Image (tube, rainbow, N blue to C red):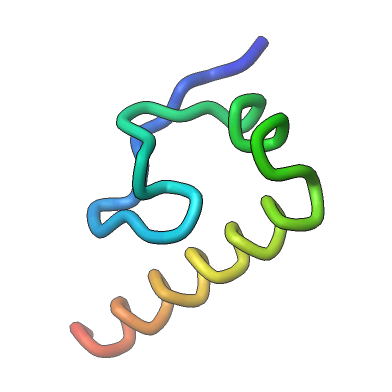
Length: 54
């Protein structure tokens, strides 16, 4: 089962052109290595924003 998810609030990278995305779509579009790198970058950005606001 593939569960759709919303893209980040400030989309960048592979998320710029997506409105609603799924892990399967992203995996098929960019491949596993690029997807992992993109997700790590998004996680790092969320952590930085959380630290800056709190």
